[in-house]
Image (tube, rainbow, N blue to C red; front, side, top):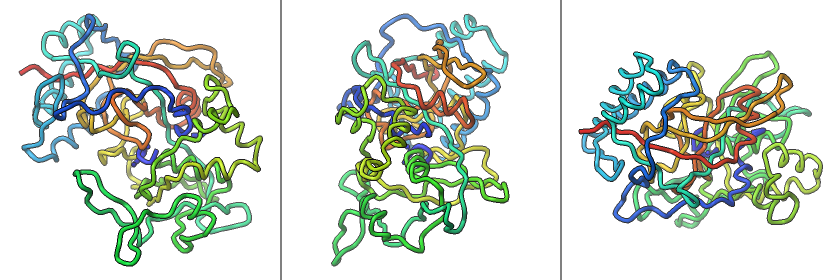
Amino acid sequence: MQTLATARQILFRLLILACGMVAAGPAAAQGGQAATMPLIAELPLLQDDLAYESLAPAIERSLHYLRQLPGEKVFLVCGKEYSAAWLSESLLTFQRIIQKKPSAQDLTAIINQEFTLCQATGGPPEHKIFLTGYFEPLFKASLTRTAAYRYPLYRKPPDLLSLPGEKEPKKKTGRLENGSLVPYFTRAEIEKGQLLAGQELAWLADPLEAFILHIQGSGQIQLADGSLRRVQFAAKNGREYRSIGRLLVEKGSLRREAATMPEIIRYLKEHPAKQEAILHHNESFVFFRWGDEAAVGPLGSLGEPLTPGRSVALDQDFFPSGGLAFLTSRKPRVNPAGEIIGWEPLSRFVLNQDSGSAITGAGRLDLFWGAGSYAETAAGNMRHPGRLYFLVKKK
């Protein structure tokens, strides 16, 4: 969830990880191989359930990212090495194809002829990935502490350090104590000890809302004058992310199949005496900064704005950053009251533009739904298997 997702409802993917109980997929492949494999079945029909127009900004953001990479940077996709420039060429070719708005059948034939496709290895059964969702929450807040707004979001503290680890690009995060780097304070230590007084960025009315923003990694706040400001991920304390959804299932407080985001939130609100201890189970803590007010959306871990329905968070150690893929799974149907009344197929082109503390391995994917009531509902209830196919232009 390190930028939007990075850290990353009333969804809040936090918890849906619920259940983090689905296999995360195989460990990183030997020799740095990307976690993809040749298609094990015939090519799926590339029927996109969104308008082609929504792909344009997502593609442009991946292109902007890839063009800034060093010329020698290479990615392993579908068993071969491709330069960042070739991934850019793949996106440009795909962009030219969809500008003609071909039918799904024609597009499938063109892609089969001009592109190499391979499937994400995922996990059992059938090499499927486990799909969750996230969105950009909006909460009321204050720039000063008041009787109503008492729960702070903090800036990055000056004593938080990130130093190179044994294996780049991994870093060791902590603080100096007697000349040695020690782990930074946990969530419980920060909140109970008020260790960061003076570093407050904004104040919220509900500790659950603050925790949600920690899991999301970014969001928007609305001030008393009605103005909106975006808060963006700045850093984290380096502690391991621990799912409170999984905790509630292991304790028998929730059944695994019922551990959706709405149910987790309901449980926490119905058991206020247990709330603090449950939230402190997740030692990971996120620090924020003000976002760019001119940005059209929250930033993903690539430093590019995310596109609703098109941007996904994946483990960047396994899959090509900025890469183009085709995703199949399910999405909810809702009635006018916003209630889920069923599920229908989801199939669309997506771009790998984010990462997350809980999105690890080859078998996890988080789909960014944007903002609003449908985004919140979809993100809060998605816990489905899916398939992911990467595309790269043939040489």
